Length: 428
Image (cartoon, rainbow, N blue to C red; front, side, top):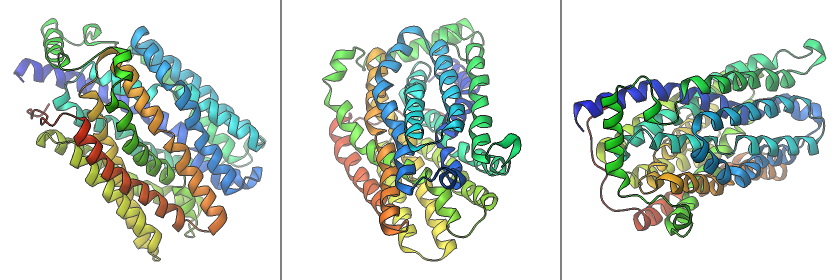
């Protein structure tokens, strides 16, 4: 990579990644703030753990149904308009959650939230392929995905404070939580039109020479990808890679959407819970960025994913078996760090051989299938909590899913992804 390319990619990274990460912080906060709302909402509405788990997870069925068509539309109309549309609609639906009064209404609104947000994450991953080559992609995907733990770091104490607004204007604290945390989606949705150019050619902050350098670098790489939609559907790699990602996502949301309740059950108040919950995500945020950089520097993907997933499994299993509060907190921190690190490198696999419309459909297809794990993880935790009275059995199941995912990513990854090592490049 010559100096002109390095300068162009560095400039694009500084201009795009922080804003994209901010968008994903808001996205993830709006989908998981239900975990904090549950600290008081479940009692107010009479929801059992099983009802809450089903409602928290049904989001992903809406996501599953609309993800592929949403990403294909993004490829055709451009990221600016479509990401703006996605954010505006999910902001409205998220705020509407404040007014649910029954289990049925809760299920419907969570399903609609998933449908509204469908296409955002795979759209962002696809968008990164428009700007950055494979050799640098793990670090940029990990920087973008650092928004997942960052959303919890920022959102946890804020959510705890908002829950304290109980009774203002005759609304419960959890209702204010949905109303207040939905507003940034609407504001940032409009900002997308100004700050997210569709392609490098539209980046006013790149010189003509820098635009040409980016285009040339990506063109060299795209000769080794396929870009048509129908051949992508016949590509076994797309379908097989969804299997280990399902296990990673099952662990991710099984932990994320129940962590506030697990922590509170240790005897903490709502405010204390919001602060303690932030700790695993601070560690996760640092870990996943460093892990993505390590993957790029070494030009290796599969073992980075598998070893991180095994760390997540170990942490969950330890949390299920330990009895001391400190030991459980350390174990949950290891689990969160491992899960997020595995996720940060995983998306380098499909983007290494898909381009154009095939990338739009393939990334969305893998994500939509694997994200059904976002339903099963929370629901399994809720079902087992209802039937066992504790969280250990559910954490054990999540640990098993991550262990299987680690094994499968080695078997499937080595069988489906090119064995050539990713080129090692200088830091951008």
